[in-house]
Image (tube, rainbow, N blue to C red; front, side, top):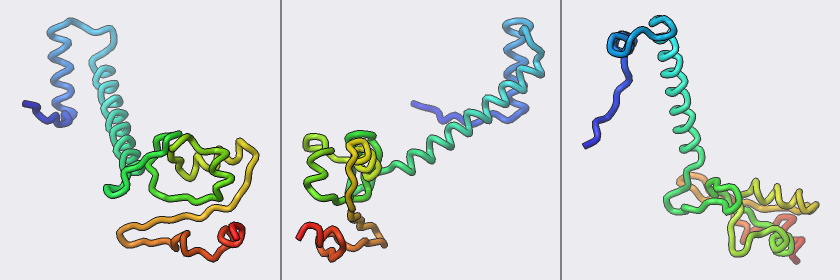
Length: 141
C-alpha cells in the first residue's frame, strides 16, 4: 500500500533536521544553513514538479487522436497537408511528422511550399483541406 506524501511544514522540516543532527552528530554546516538549504530544495522541487505537469498538459494527445510525431515525440494534434512531391522528399517511411518537424525538414532540404492545416476539436473546426479552394488546391490543378 502506497501512502501519499504530504509536504512538510517549516516546523516539521526543522524538527526532522534537528533529529537527524542528534542521531548522526554535528553537521559540517550550521543547522540554520541546513534548514535554509532544505527549504530552497523544497521550493526548487515544487517548481520542477509544476513545470513537469505543465509540459505534460501541453504535450497531451487527444483521446480520439493519440498520435505523436515520429521525429520529436510531440503530440500530433494539427494535420498538416503539403503537396506529395514535397512530402515524399522529407517523410519518414510510413511515419508521421508534426508541423514543426515538417517545417524543419523542408528548410533543411532547401524546400518551400504552402501547407493547409486541419483540426477538429470539441468546439473548434478548421476548414477542411479536402474542400479547399485556396492556393494549394490551385497548385494541384
